[in-house]
Image 1 (cartoon, rainbow, N blue to C red):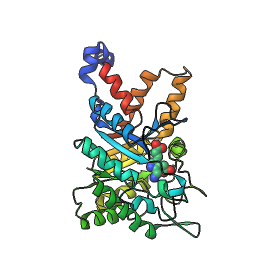
Image 2 (cartoon, rainbow, N blue to C red; image 1 turned 180 degrees about the vertical axis):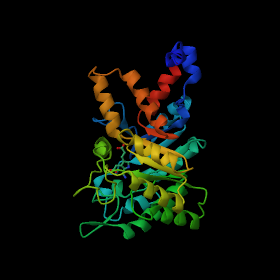
Image 3 (spheres, protein in one colour; image 1 turned 90 degrees about the horizontal axis):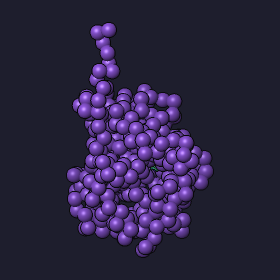
Image 4 (cartoon, rainbow, N blue to C red; image 1 turned 120 degrees about the horizontal axis):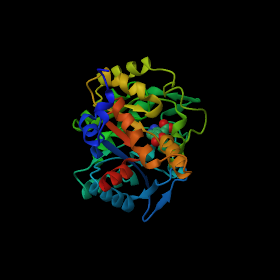
Length: 324
Ligand code: PBG
């Protein structure tokens, strides 16, 4: 035999030397759930290890992450039902607890990178990402709402706004809104290929944001489609996105790879709540070696082509790395 691939695997030193993909703590964005109040920490049953925190405790979380080398965060608000309405107007109140907390985080830690979620669902009495009119999601009525939401977030100090709503034309609308308000340095990470997925279930528990009627299939993509992801990517790029995201990650590794091969923009992948829940549950039952399976899962997302990984595992992964 001339060819013996095993020669390149014969020792840890050699394996380390030829490794093609390496995860870094700096690749990650850590999602955090925010509630109004003080001293509040409410565990999310379907996401063991993840809680909703009030401002003071989110600040403590961020402090712990910074020590671990984790500096990027996406913050999602869990809004009380009584504050929700058709127009998601609470998102536009500059004194709301979300914007207040963003300002406070930026005051405490000016060096961290903060990403927002731009979509109506956490604030909408209909639980949809867009404006509901006559039982339909009205695309063009949604755009100005998203634009205003993004400007409020930029004003509060958000570094990257994250439109997760999948309305047509939203990246351009948000870009124009930000620029005309003087926020030309605020970046846009577009949820480019966001699929209508069952894997968002635990997240909707966390925010109590499930749609009040129907589903999200008229705006989120059909899991069967890949070429359509290229179409979305071309539009987002033309409309001014700074990053393209694929979501969820695991069932869509092929989509991550395809987008990576067809753009020069950085690619992000969202390792979503259901993916987290699945692995946690199998680990808790002793059906899988969690400590090994978790980094393997994250590595697969990077190997597929993701430059950036949004993951609920990020902090634990960083802690694991810290221990060596
Ligand atoms: C809503 C939004 C969702 C997630 C991020 N932003 C849920 C949805 O579209 O219903 C899901 C994240 C996760 O499951 O971890 N705009």
